Image (cartoon, rainbow, N blue to C red; front, side, top):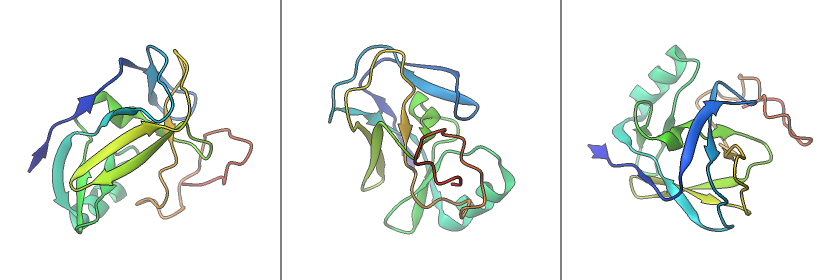
Length: 137
């Protein structure tokens, strides 16, 4: 099953100070506003875990129903990097993964989200640079 991505604010992908490429706001994004949602393919959790082992950088979110959304090839929103002090939050609604602004995000600012538990099981170093950084993802 394919999920269509939606982006409600103009974003740009460029080099990130956190990891690889990042998504950056092209205009101010007001607090609590929906930024958009990931697009991609619904896959099994087993397939998601296998992909996580084989890739340094993935965009996969496990869903409530035992499935996962593989957004590795779709949408600019997949470039939102992890941070221990994020400016967005993620919400799962059915098979959709939505991102909202936790606070006003300034033009030019990189979007970040606390991923919570990941396929990396705490074995990947966190590079967010936040004062309260846990040191791992």
